[in-house]
Image (cartoon, rainbow over all chains, first blue to last red; front, side, top):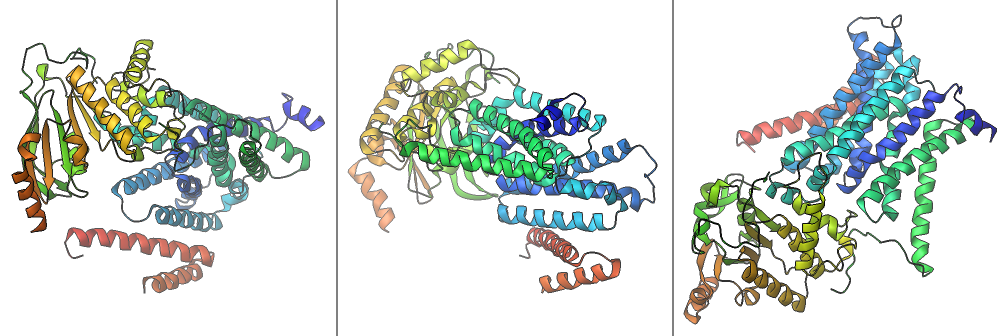
Length: 306
Length: 257
Length: 49
């Protein structure tokens, strides 16, 4: 309990890391909802990796241009990383979405290829980049150690924008996802709303990767969402549960990691996995015990007598 | 986005007093297909206002392609579709898809699905206001779907889902109700009840109805006009004109030949 | 053939520029895939494929 008191103390040395981790935990599932419902789970694997390649490429740019940023404010480095992450992610997600709509090739093949090539490219770029010594390799592994006030503010503002946009346009985004044909007949600009959905996903992934790395980003995008889906009966419940599970798990994961001196990111990921496993077991056992169970949403649906 | 007044579905005729024989949709030498290649061409058919028209055809005959072209999901390969509505207002389609097209993964209630019909009138960054939500309840009552509207849409039976989707289509305040194989995945008794219900809506509200199906026996009792897509040709007429022994022999001889 | 060429090119690049071999081969294969994809689109437009 002493460690929990320390974490909750306003003078806690790593308080920015806690805040960032919790923000990411709350925000990622909100866009993860669309990845799961649109059956784009593999995109949640590929995008964070592509985003981290963008970070690596952006940090390699000064090296290629012969610039030495080591004596400069780290904020420049972080802005550079942010720009690289955003650019790579948005280009990738729009390209993948375009190819998906055109129906060319296999989606899983494209995403798998994008993931593995992005991972390989990250390794190549970082192997030649002395800036990797500044902790970016640890970031890729999900070590959230030092987060400056600037990074925290940037992350909070960016995620607040995502939250506001999701809240304001939720019904359009849901309509285009659920029934594209109806959206066309209602004269909605489906290309615009589709693009906005993908941009929100890409933007959130970029912010998450900068803070917690690709592995944890993927974990927060999908696992809380899948856990919430086991129990939610309405879209509102689904969204709120997913976000709450992500936020609470990120805090508890940080506490466990701090308590036992473990890397934060992998601890969060394992905790999320345990929560999902527990949820699955509860969902499976509950009907067997004859108690009223939550609605079961299976991919093929269930029919009742009309 | 429709904000100005237009005939709600309970007001059958436009105020300029046009009759029900006035065409509301005219296919003018229309060719439909994909990637610039026509699968059907020379479609010249007029659909009368307030009529009940069935589009018949076997699987692969081009029914869905015709529907998608009409709804604007894909452009025609050639020709055009003329729309005739008063005051040059855009034609509103109340579209009822096949239930299998909707992903059961979404945790939406029947009411949530029906409410989507109002999104054409409710702009971005607005939540559907109280009067629209009440209107959706009215539509659900009209389709006898209000009893199960709070249940998860994916858990409903095929017939229940169709009623929710028809309520959604009515919630759009449509000029034309378009139903894509509404009896698919529904047992025979429910299919008959559904067609009876659609006929009832047509009779009460004088809605123009376009129903796509491959089930000949169901629609001949209800449809006024038939558009029959058969082996690359388009047959058009009333039930009485098409379903004579001579005409049927001619059609099926073409099939055997 | 494409796979072999890309693999050899990747190995050569790893040797020449002192890069991790596995990552270099993967990137070479990815580049080959991209080139083949673009060529396929170009050839289809020219009605060659």
